[in-house]
Length: 356
Image 1 (tube, rainbow, N blue to C red):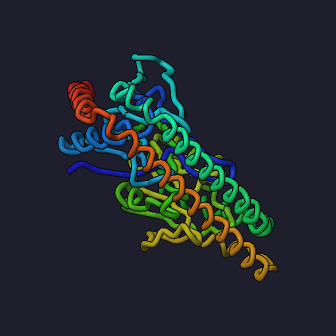
Image 2 (cartoon, one colour):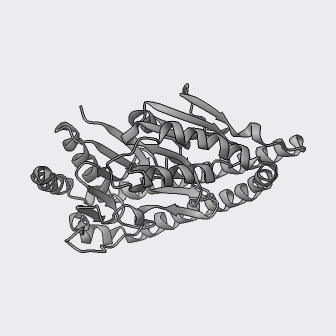
Image 3 (tube, one colour):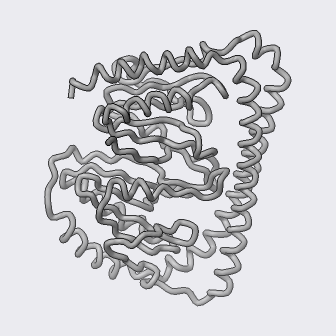
């Protein structure tokens, strides 16, 4: 049975759309398909077809979910084959860095009926503008929510006992990372979730699929980032590949860290991002700090939550506009052609399995 995990390469935050798409391919990548083509052209159909076929032959498959609508796909990765396919259109536009040698364009736009699409020009333009306006409204709300949230975070960070936390981390490193691995020590960056049209979605099921032992860090003050970065660097230096999951609000700061080779994970939990399972160990970072204005903190957090609810509503409006846009395009798309191309590319991938 193939192992299946789900992550994100995009996220919605106070600074707008956050992207990790440019970090997907690296020197280790053998083949990256960059899918081109507009709304409704069958990118998700193509990705689902390839992913299901690779699952059937026992390959590990990592699905990359859409940050706007997590029911849709933005890509997939075949970790054991160093191959991937990803949506390369806006807002996460990608172009090949090493054309054909590593990454290549797969044009799905060829399956549009060009003249039929032009006949629906006015409707298409109106829906695209409506979609953009809804996204703009969502990002305004998220920006306001983040500014309010930062007021509460600053107070908790100011009082945090970093030295005590570092001592705790010394013990974890000595216990969990004493063994050296034989891997390249590569770091793959993925979002574990974020705010979507369906509310806040976190794929902790992927943590459980990769890790039999999980440390949970309770952290409502955004304190775990430096600790997780130290763990990431130590693990990589000792020969372990890691999956580093940054914050959608601040991609330079880590929130979760997975070390699949050790089946070991570190996750942070806070209101709205609860791990929800019994961890191997729980580290209460919140107990290493304090604030004196708890009433004000509660008020600010309620304000931020209300603004994020409005952002979710706007993202839902964006989804409705996008669904309507796809409904316009879909009758003019040759989906049999899309599936036939997916079958050809699946065959190509299968022919490469023996090279490893």
